[in-house]
Amino acid sequence: MNEEKDDIEKILSQFKEQRENKEHPPILPLEPPKRREEYIDFSKPEETEKKPKDKPKKPKKTPEELQQLKEEKKARAAKRKEKAKIIFQRLKKALFHKRNLIILVSIAAVAAAIFGIKYAAEQSKAAYLKPYEKKYPDVEFQVGMLEKYCDIIGQSPDAAGYLEIPDIDLKTAVSSNEKTFPNAQSCTVGAEQFNYVVYLNDSSLENVYSSARSYNNASGYMLYSDFYNEYNFKIVGAFYTNTRAEDDNGYIFPYNVTEKMTIDSASEYVSKLESRFIYSTGVNVTRQDTLLTISCPTDYHKNFRFVVVGVLRENTDSKFTATEKSSDIHYPQIIYDEMKKDNPYKFATKWYPEIMVTDKEGNEKTIQKTIKDYQ
Image (cartoon, rainbow, N blue to C red; front, side, top):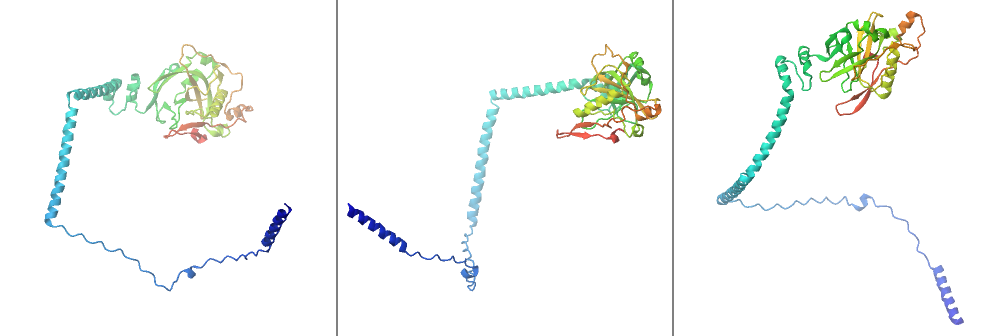
């Protein structure tokens, strides 16, 4: 056993000695890559490109062969025509089969009936306009217009609405032309209207609504129509306002904004509107209300307007009651100067509305109005 162990140790010792004495070949450095000139011999002439062999020309056909091809082509065309004729005859036979013919006639009858009903309904809806279209051939009437206003529209093609104020016996068309009185303030294209503003050239409305006492003796409502609907408005307040910026520290209150505004802007408008009312009716105007604003000339002060505001209400049987205002009334600065009183609103912001407009693509955006829009 010891001899075998000695032999194994001897073999391992010899193997170790051989491994240590083994010579390792030196590592040769890498050769640099050859340049283009070293593997391309530029002295040799360039090999010419081999041209493809010309294809053998087909022998020309004889007149007899050409005539035969022509006849074969003609025969194939005649065969296709005959086949199409057979298919058409089969289709015709199927379509005009008694049973199929009944189905086709039924379908046509139903379609005609639907079209006829629709056409008759449209004609029926527009029937009431026919006499007015004949009477006023140059005026365009739209289905849905109230017939009671058709003569007014015919006589005043530029009319934008119709106004009734019982307190001053006023019943009149309202023009879209600002040079004609009464006229309506336009609304920005793409905006939703919330305030109908009408300008009068008569000051008689001031006598009825310039104080709480006179208000309580009046009817308290107005009617306005856009020719498609009629709206009743209850009067909630009145105020005086300047039309020149220099009369109110460079500011003109935009009471005549017609477009729907952003939430913040609408809330600001309502607050400023109520602060200017010269009496209180106990009605809190909200941004959801629809308004009718009547602007009139006044002798109260030069370049001023007297403004009456109504809110849309269905019930006209009952009226509001006006009381003298307990808080300060917001007048333009020039009034405080003439009364030699301090203006409690002298630090109020010079607010102008931010309106919402929808473009033709249906995208909604906001527009910030400035004093230039209300001068």
